[in-house]
Image 1 (cartoon, rainbow, N blue to C red):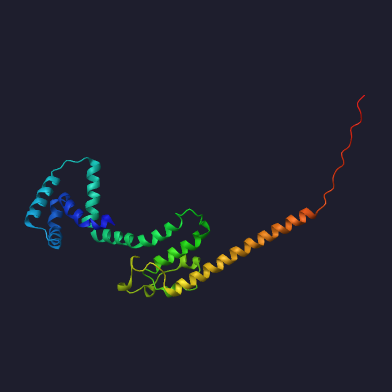
Image 2 (cartoon, helix red, strand yellow):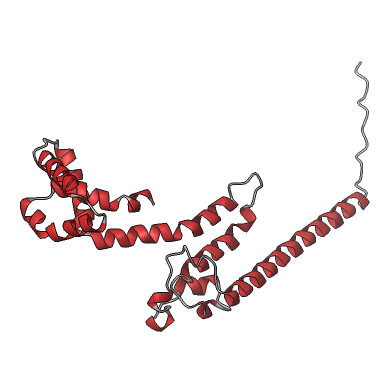
Length: 220
């Protein structure tokens, strides 16, 4: 989140590392940043001075490679970088809810499957219509091919911050599935306990033959 917030500052700073040709190419976007943040003439002059110092700064090969990568992400691939960071920020709330479930003192590994399913559905409902997840098995979800008519309208899509839960229909189906899974698990557990008790009772009821001890003949 802090990286996304600082992107304008990074753009202005690393502009000084661009080649002369790239600086000419991205001069207008830089001026748009100045206008957006109401940069004064004094501030612009100070920034130009910093850019000149950066262009003359000596760097190791490792530093040059890093500078090239950062400039590529900030200027040449700015749209992709912003999109990726927005997606990370959007799903942060969803992932945080999932992780916090297993950070308590109680052992909740038996809820791992259900929580993973909830997480997957919560992410999909950010951009896919919830009606396509009703009565769908986990395997079908994994193998589902997303078609254009299954996607939400662009204005209704969310990165996760405003729509962090499945639709009511999907949530009802998920809760019903979780309830059935819990009942099945409890039934199996009860059956196992009953079988164990029956086995113990049968074992106690059995009379096992006892081998008589034979006395040794006296040694003369």
